[in-house]
Image (cartoon, rainbow, N blue to C red; front, side, top):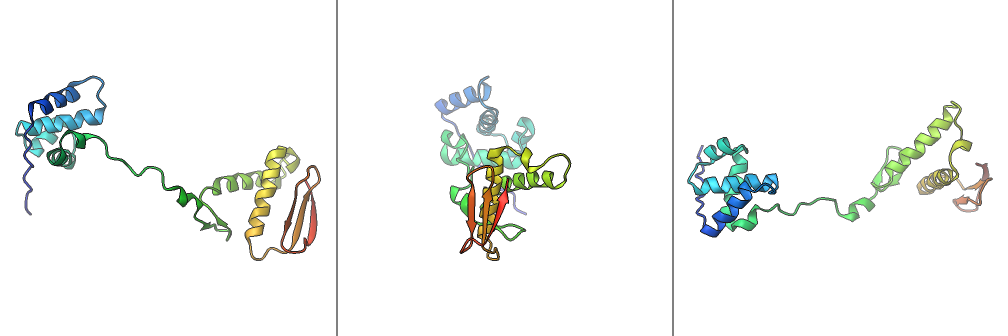
Length: 181
C-alpha cells in the first residue's frame, strides 16, 4: 500500500493573517475555524496525522481541507453549494401506491390523513362523519373522488353531498347517485 504524501502548503503573509483571524476569532463558525486550523498547521510543516491528532478532525477531513486549500486558496475553505431540496419536477412524478393508485410524492400525507378520518368514523367509537369539519369533509370527498377517477375499474358514479353543493361525477353517464354527508 502506498502512502500519499501531504500536499505542501505555503502561506503568504496576508493569507496567514486572515486564517489566524478565522482560527482564533470568537464569531467564526465552527467549521471554518477547524478548516483554518488545519491549513495553519499544514503551513507550519505538520503531517496530516499530527494535524488530525492535534486539532481533532478525522485524517480524511484534514487531507480534504489541505488539498482544497493547496489547489485554490482561501475561497476553497467556504462550504460548497449543496444539492439541498430535490428539483420540483420530482414532486410531480407519479408513483404507484400499494392500492394501485398513481400519486405524486406530495400527496401521500393528505391521503393518510383522509384514511385516519375515515378510520375513526369506521370504528364507531363516538366519532362519525358528522363530526368532521365541513371543509375537511369536502376535501376528503374530493380526494376520494379523485382517487376513484384515476382508477380504470371505477363504474359510472355520481357523488352528491346533502349539506353542500358538492357534486362529483365519475365515468361516463353519471351512473348511480350516492347522497349523504
